[in-house]
Image 1 (cartoon, helix red, strand yellow):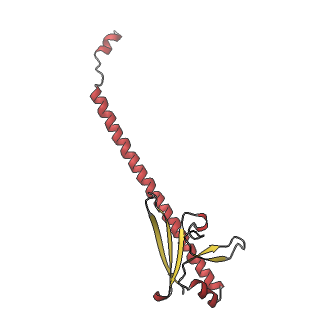
Image 2 (cartoon, one colour):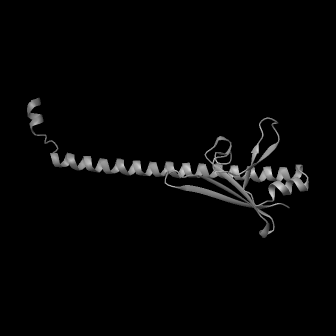
Image 3 (cartoon, rainbow, N blue to C red):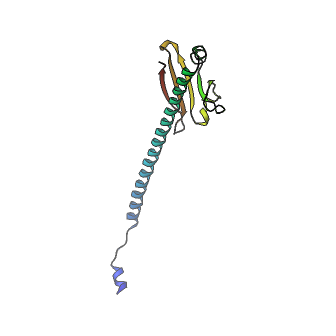
Length: 153
């Protein structure tokens, strides 16, 4: 009896199996592509957020130096045409160190991060400081950057 029951059941043909495998492959490929794009977008947003934090910290350090230093010292260091960054001095745990920019110096791997920081002063625009933060983009085929402008009061 049981044998007669299975004789009447027709199985899937090879064409049906191949079509289902192709459909499954398309669905999985699309899901992978969307998740990969989502991961890259999230990583880019995170890097841009961290870059904004780095640039904001440079502005805060610049403001702190403006308050702490006398006007002559501040002008000689921070109001010249030399590109610079302001580093945290770990030895004193509260002071900042003026560092001129060089391609292999501390500003290029800013405090151990993936970011390059380059501050500059432009006397022709009412004393505007430009903070440029650069890092390698997620795709690895170029650089992303973020620029903030600040003018002391």
